[in-house]
Image (cartoon, rainbow, N blue to C red; front, side, top):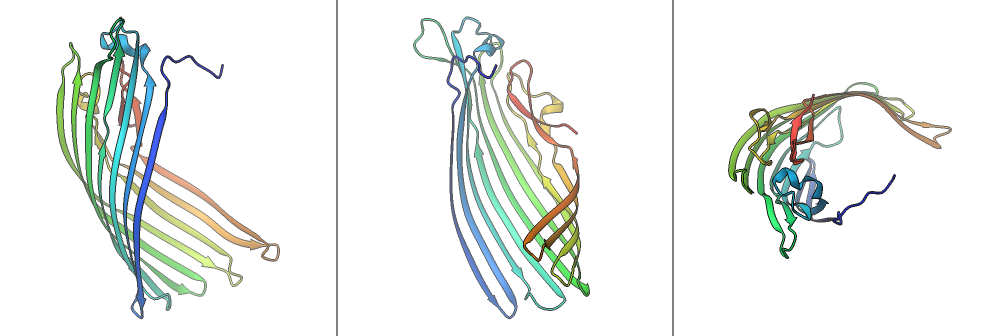
Length: 283
């Protein structure tokens, strides 16, 4: 019950490389930090697709292989300044930028009886280019003994360009796609905390995260109007927590209770009948 018979070895390869440099400086005005990084992420997977070949009009094929891969190059720059850690008011201000290129080729091949070379049935060569820019800041104020309140926000602009070339055998039609989109918005953060004279801490936190949308391009036929694009999703988090030292400070306890609201959740779904993946908002 814990095994299955495949005609193709379903292997996976994953490679990751990173180079980064950080510059720091400080003075009476505060502290500055700059972080620059380059990331390269390559991964590839192979699957047994023999059972799906009849969908593509190749019922006479011996077996099929589906391969998908990704080559991701990302360059990021983050720079921020923090105020001196003295006084009742403290602040942070920064800027973030990134450039990302993601190439995701996929290929379905079938082995026909008596033919040495496999036949390509379906290919897609897709490239997503994303440029992101964000400005952010946060201020904290000690308004009473032990009490600290903070407010922060992040504003962003994300430009996306997607290109795709799909080649598929008859009776289906090959096609090309180029689409662009721009996502703008902001996310807030607010917190309230109390630090006891013993150093123990309790806090309330509200924070928000955002993920941009994108486009679907794969499949035997062009995606339907409802599936051509997927929307951004947003996650808002409410949290109540404590950081305590108990038993004569021999036990360090950190605990939190949180409640999340996640709208327009992005998830991978699968097209019928081809079984190829696309992204949808599911609730």
